[in-house]
Length: 280
Image (tube, helix red, strand yellow):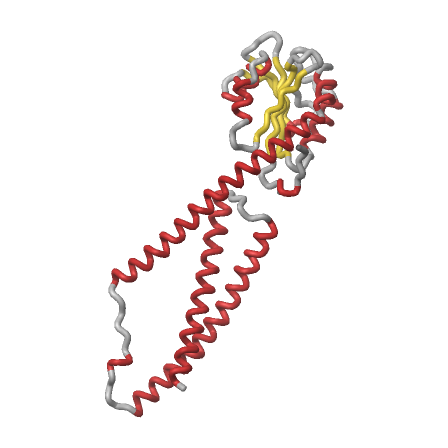
């Protein structure tokens, strides 16, 4: 009878430790997912993992309670045995492992976590590359569909737009910015008098009718790329578009095939791009 009780206690402890390790692993993955902005798991998978975590925590609490009860029972059994058998038998004692063994176990656990995080980081990198490509294909499709509307609005502007932003152009930018895959957008226009300057209008300015185009001196790489695109040399802008990120630059040309504007779309990283169907 005593041997069966010991096996039940050992089984309970083993299961409880396994559940706690599972919960700890999910906590560590959740922390790295939040810090590194992983996109490995879909919302449904995250919901399942959350369910597994809370279930493992609940079951481990019951396991702890059972371990306490069975442990007390074993203590009572051991005290009774010692009272009935006055002679001490050291065969019941278990020698503690050497400190090196503990270090090896800890090193193994740490190495396992490091390997797991490293593998998931590589997987997440591949997923981010795929999501970036999907976003850019969606952005390219939508901007092509809206090209005619933008050309119609932009051709009505002066060569130096300054603070004059027509209501129709603001409404168009607002509608595009409300698309779920768009975080924000910026419209760039050239300055016919000074090539060191470009004009920009950001989507968050549409609600303020007093805010118009801002005059911007070309300095950053993307600004230089936009200026070169205005001059008919979009090579650098294409190279920027090929990078893995959630930014898309679209060159808007008129009927004479002249570049009259550049549209920059910042993608919504929280968007679930799995729901989109792309045309071939």
